[in-house]
Length: 392
Image (tube, rainbow, N blue to C red; front, side):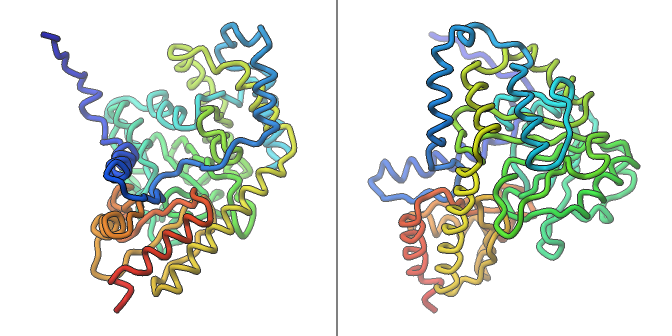
């Protein structure tokens, strides 16, 4: 009989993988034969731009890339990252000391806690927020204080509501704008306030810029554009959203040289960087024409407008998201987020993500992804509009 080995205490204390549970729910309904429209996950549905795919195909034939890559990534990719930030955000970066290549931004967002936090150190996390921030802090054995993101404060944390003793204890703060799940955006004034707070209390700021190219009313602001940001923090960017390269697993961190050094050191023990041909294609994506990036945002805007106008016509008063490819929808009166998500799932066969899964302050909302074609979003709207809750 095969022996069962017990997991480590670190594995046992990890939070439940929220998105894995969502995927399992959708798969079970499909197996039952239902036509399920999955708006619950954030998996881009469109292909990678053709010129990026061609770059990979050509680079894959280069024997140089069949060997181990340099542990910290190929210099040409880090140089492309620096050039991208200079062109798009006016930010100057040293490619060698202020850029770290990541196997997707998720990797870095989990690793940074292990790089900076010891057991019982304190981290500040947004609530609601991306669940994997909590995965990293859990692995590090750190304590967590949640920063509520409230509608009345445009889903920005109110630093004035945080106890000064908590701020003095905190070593790491996670922020994310454009925001997942609330779809809110941040302005320069908020980031200036963040830098000032971090400087006073000695906090490292990690800004998750995963949706940095997806802003509907104006171009999203990079945290690195803020004076002093490089002194107190880093920003993490992924190729997944801007270039539809989710399956390629390539991202990067930029900013504070000491944090970049720590990330590189940890990754030296975990990986031998990324396949060189993927790095080659990623550099071409960053250096090349950005038409496809702008067209992608236009596509999401059309989907956003279709979803929001359709739900409003059905009698559901919902706000239009300002950024990201999500909509953050208040559930109708008398419903919890999980109960209403279940109703949509079982009566309309539309998968959404209950806001409570992103933290206590997410209760009362649903997250809906704009990652289905317009005809499927229209179908979802029509199904939802037929529910009895909107027929009263």
